[in-house]
Each structure stands twice: as structure tokens, then as C-alpha cells.
Amino acid sequence: MISPKSLMKIATTASVAAITVSVAVVPAYAMQDIAIEDTPSSFAATVDDAQDSSNSMPDNPNATLPETVSENISDDSTVVSENLAVTPEGDVQNIETGETVTDAQLVGTQSQQPDPLAKTDGESFIPVSASDVKDAVEQPVKQSAEQSSLKGGSTVRLTKFESNEYGAHWGTDNGTKAFFDYRNNLFVQQAKGVIDVSSWQGDIDWAKAKADGVEGAIIRLGFGWGNDADTKAQRNINECKRLGIPFGIYWYSYAEDASGSRQEGNDVVSKLRQFGVSPNDLKYPVYYDLESWTWTGHTPPTNPNVYNGIVNAWYGALQSGGYQNLGVYSYTSYLQGPLNNANIYAKTRWVAQYGPQMEFTAFGTNDRGWQYTSSGQINGISGNVDMSAFGNKTFVSEMNFSDVDAKTPHADDIKWLVDNGIAEGWSDGTFRGMDSVKRQDMAAFLYRLAGSPEYAPGSAVEKRFADVDGRTPHAKEIWWLVDNGIAEGWSDGTFRGMDSVKRQDMAAFLYRLAGSPEYAPGSAVEKRFADVDGRTPHAKEIWWLVDNGIAEGWSDGTFRGMDSVKRQDMAAFLHRFHTKV
Image (cartoon, rainbow, N blue to C red):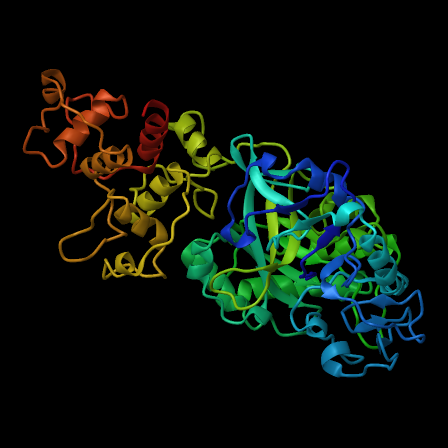
């Protein structure tokens, strides 16, 4: 993929008084919201003219500029890493020495494509023109002189922001998590924090990554055609499935024409089937990664019409294989150049842009993703990782279950549950309303209902249950329940997360979630159910539910406390709890 990694320092003239402002922004790895008003107008006003750091590559704020650029590097060459440039003829040169690079691991051979991330040791980099790099190399002296003459020595410094060095940030919009540019212009609402990964991240501890806020992953499956799959793809896919992390796939293209892209598409289908990935497993699309590639003896297309044929052939191969959820990934300058085609724009759903705002504005779909940094830090992953904000430009109901319609009991409550991010349903597009709610899923529902508060479990609670560890689905949410006195587990030291939740236990959970309010049942409610009296487990909590309009019981006058809670009934209980308590 593509990326950067530095701290941007912005110098500007103060209009009123000489002050130094430190803009504190929430780290991306926490995936937490910040209030929109937390970004001062002074920051928005000054960043416009300060998008280029004096020591970083154009479009790559975390990539260091070379001290010099060899005179052998022509202006029409393309810089593809901190150290390498590619001529229009496809020759790779060292930027500072001008020497031709022939290492097959970096440039491949006539018949073998190289791993595209080998040039940058697994880091991402947006290719830029050599002329722009040359201009940037000459800029520091000029910038230094300008900065030294600032009125009163005033500067505005952006404190290190692990998600975007320029101030693009998380917030809320329309009651949902959202992502904004530095001027607080909405990019997406209903947003999710998503990472993209490959073998260069090694063995990821996905349980830790999920607990640290990762809400989705785009997994590299491979590149080109006739090559082995990414060596960590199968493991990453299996772990995301096991832990319930929504995922998509990306495939890096080396296609020169439609024939090559068709081969790439066939390879994608073959490997998806080999790794057991059905179309229903994919929460996010299969992305076609189109970039200015480097491969000995070959040159990437420059004509948008050629690229249009490449994209259509790849799409055709995937669609013939049964995979319909597809998208194009690239970066802004490439989209505005070789990919400048209406059909490609209509398919573009994920764009890399390392700056204060998204400059590509021709997304063809309401759903979209902004890869806004490569310097994210996530527990469970060594080193940096690319981060993106995925969501919808305009709000849409996310409920689209094949087994839920207007006749489904509690359909409106199910819709509310989904729209508020409390439940998602299954990867096959069903909600399964008549299935019983598992105790570990109940933990997740209640944690989300409470607003997904920031929480880090201590070592004591992590050892509380013999059957709960970091690999257990919703482990963090289970520990949160315990630390907040909502659940206790069983006397044998287990939680039994896969057991079904009983209706009487559900009453206790909700009562405790409400803060265990003072409550004395009246005689009328005590007589409400034939099967509930003072000896019934959680009788007070059951009566509290009824008195607060959260539960009603059955028409035969029973509550049936030992029955399992159905998913569609849980939707109703949680919605009423939210409304009435």
C-alpha cells in the first residue's frame, strides 16, 4: 500500500499576539472520538499554506527527503521510495547516486514481479514526481529563512497525532462515530477504524488489536499473477473470522493490459477459494490496488483508457467467480492522472491521502474509505500500520437482513440496534432473531449500549475466569461487565460465554447496568406472573423490568425466567431500556 510518518511543525505569523499553541489530538490507536470544537480555528487557518514539511517528501510527511538528488535523475522520473526513482523507461535508480538498481528483490526480473513493499521495507509510500522532490530539496533553506522572521517568534505546533499529522480527526456526526478533515468537514459518518495488513506486519496478535479498537481489516492476499499468496494471508483471515473482526481483501496490480488483469482476477478468485473465503465472509470489498508499479523490463500504463480495460477485465473475473463486492484503491495523484476515467472513479471506494483533507472528491459510492496515515500504533502489531476511516458520506440504515422484514417481531427494534452499532448480524446477511443470545454476545451488547467506554482490564480480572482469555470472543466486554458489577460468573470460576442468557438473568444484567437503583415492588406487580414470587432468582429485577416498561411477559400470565432470551426479543429489551431508563 502507500504511506508516511513524521511530526509536522507549522510556523505562522500571529495576527494578534505572539503565542505558542499546542493542539492536543486523540491518538488513532485509541480509536476514540474527539469533540469537533477541540480543533481551533487558528489551526485550520494556518495549515493551508503549510502542507509541506521542510524535511519530508511531497505527499509523504513521514518519508525523509534526500540531502541531494543526482543530476542523473530526470525530472520526469517517479520517486517510489525514500531512496529510489524510476525512469519513464522503467529503470530504477538510487536517488542520491543515480546508479541503476538491479536487486531482483526490489525490481523483480523480466518474468517475475517483486513484492511491491520490498522497496520500502514494508512501509507505504505515495509515488511522486522527481521534479517535485527536487523542488522540495531546495526548499528548506528558504523555509528556514521565512520561519526565522516570524513576528514575535510565534509558532503553532501540532502535537504528535498518531493518526494524521495534519489534523484530520475522529468525532461524531448524526449520533455516530465520524471522521473529519482538518477544517471539520465531514468525510464519513457511521465510521469504523480499519487497518490494512500484509506479511510485513508479521504474526499479529489479533485479539489485542481488536481490544485496542480495530474495527475492521483489509488483508493483502497477493500481487500480480503466478505468485504465491501473501505468507500471512491465511492466518490473518482465520484470526479475523475467529474473533469476528470484519475484513476485506486487497490485491496489488502489475497489469499492463486487460490480459494481465484478467490473470490477476483469476488468481484472486482461486486464492480466496483456497483460503475458504466465501463472498458472504467479506464485510469489506475485495480491492484492486492500482499504483505506479516498478518491475524490470516493464512499464505501467499511463493511458486512462488502457486502465479502464484493465479494471473491467479484473472485475469480470471476480464477478464470474461469485464475488460482487469490489472496489478500486489508489492515491489521489494517480487517480487524477493515469486513472482519470469516469468508470474507474465510479468504482473507487478507498483512497490514500496523507494530508489535512481528502482531495479526491469523485467517489462513485456513498460508502468510502480514507487511508489517512501509515504511522498508526496498535497493540498486537509491531511497528507502524496503515489506518483508514471507513463509513458512509450520508447516513443509511445498516439493517439489510434477508430474514428480517416488516412482519418480523420487533423489526423496528432490530433496526435501532443495528443503526446504533450495538449488533451487526451474521456474515451471511442474516440476523437470526430466533437464535438464543449467548452470554459473551450479551456482554458485547451491553458494553456497546453503554457507549463502548474506554476500558483496560487489569491483571486480576483477566485471571478471573478459567474459560476467558485474550482469544475469547468479546473478552474485553466480559471483563468490563465484571469490573462494573454487572456479571459475576459461576462459582466454579467459569463464565460460560457460549451458554444462552436466561430471561431472569437478563433482568439482573439490565438492572445492574442501570446502576441498581432503589426499588420496592408494589403488590400489583408482585402478583403479575404466576411463575415469579419472592423465591424466584432475580425476582426484584424482573419486577423492576416490568414497572419500567422494559418487559411484559407472556399472555398466559407467566414470565418464563428460565427460557433463553431470543435475539429479536433482546433487541426490544435493549431499545426500551435505552428509551425508558
